[in-house]
Length: 499
Ligand SMILES: [Zn+2]
Image 1 (cartoon, rainbow, N blue to C red):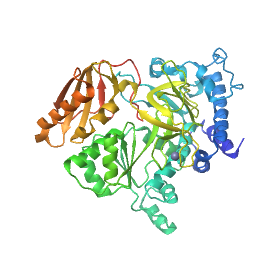
Image 2: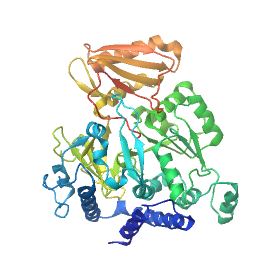
Image 3: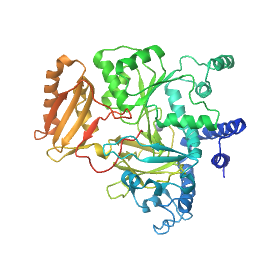
């Protein structure tokens, strides 16, 4: 057992009981810091060493599942899986494939007995078109480990934002003016490093910080963090950015997308952050181009409530390095068989850190491919590429073609630049409706014609396309904007989680 494994085991072991005293919190903070330091190097390990770590974690998790998770207890032998004999992650394919519908049907089957009532937090995946909200259980030990694992993308974000890593870490512990003085004395720069989070108040990362603050000395609200709700109008967000001058902004992808289209369409000029980190949903190619043309780099991590961070972009921002030692990712066809590298398929995950809820061979609902080529950055973690719309966002045309809503958006990108908000709805297969908020309302007739013309070309003449101009498009109660709505709903999953 390596020293880092040992610290991890100790950390998990201390998190079973009541809230700790100050000394306990300091000790845990030191443990998280030690693991975080170790995490910085892992992405650069030789792949064989990463796979050996992955295999150890699979075995540990399978033993745990076998002894205390109802869905897997006494069943592993039946599926031909012996935790001690498993030789690679590919063996997980022998387990039955599960998905959001199976989880929503009876979530407690996947929860370990000792975490049913205590020692865990329950997160809810946010609203879906099918209306199924799934509880996701995370034990406190795994949540604290997530704080340490985050180091893998934290160093990239600091580099892209032009921040000194030591300053970033030190600031995470600063909570008030008095400590600002201390920071100045220590030579830590605290000004010009503001961060703005345009995310829901109950967003999981904020809930996690509360947990950290109760169990470590990591504060719930560092002094340089500012929050806005994601339903905030764009001109208000723009005013905040101009006033706070954040170096990094965090938001959903759709919010970033619309915000940059708003700036462009309305001709608003504000000093932009160095880096815009988006999560939850996607940023279109046109949104990304607009941001970068304005001098703001965009960056994403790929995560899911069910898994934590599945992958993260490196400085090249071309695909996601998979945290394959923390979450096994397989790319599978409709029958669950693995497809070769370079070929797109369904993303099927097996998160390895979580002890409260065990989900193995879980079809997430996204599509992507594993790059056959290594990344030039030096990290050996495999690269996930062509991550695209979930299956619930596949739109059926009159001629039977299926297009992802992302592909449709990309095809309409020139027209979409003249809008602030847009939503494509499939009212029925072959019958689509664009719901648009125009940048310049007076232009709407010309814009309608442009959309119809493009639609005939891209969607085929037989597809009916309506264009509707509205004042605003409603968000979901969680503040999430639905870029596409497909009716009738395609089955029970997958869902728009707070990713
Ligand atoms: Zn890379």
